[in-house]
Length: 188
Picture (tube, rainbow, N blue to C red):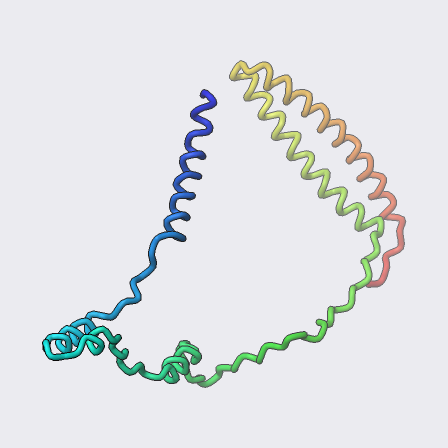
């Protein structure tokens, strides 16, 4: 792509925008001359030849304009549909500029992380890791059967890491099980 094609579209757009703005500001606005009704009335009054020249050239008085009072009143009124409240309806509360601060519930103290609690969490982690190891073994076998050696090698490395972590989790679970068995039960 050459440099010219990069600059031509934005330059053309800028020129069009500039031309539109120039036309907007310098184009003559709507003509403030007499309306069609005034012109026809003026033509009828100018028709007699005996009328003096000063009278014909005098501007015609504009017709009486209705007062803007009723229109302003209509515009200031909201145009929303008013629906009467039915049984069981609750009217909304009026909005307040600065509402009072909301009261939050008190924070409950953290439950003690006892050895039994830690053991339950560790058992759950061990179950999840065991499931992941079985999934990785199956994916590695599938990759080897397809002949994808790179994927099989990557999965073998990931599988060895997961198996090492699973061994550590099994050791920690056994230690926590022994600790949880020797701990006194706490009253809730």
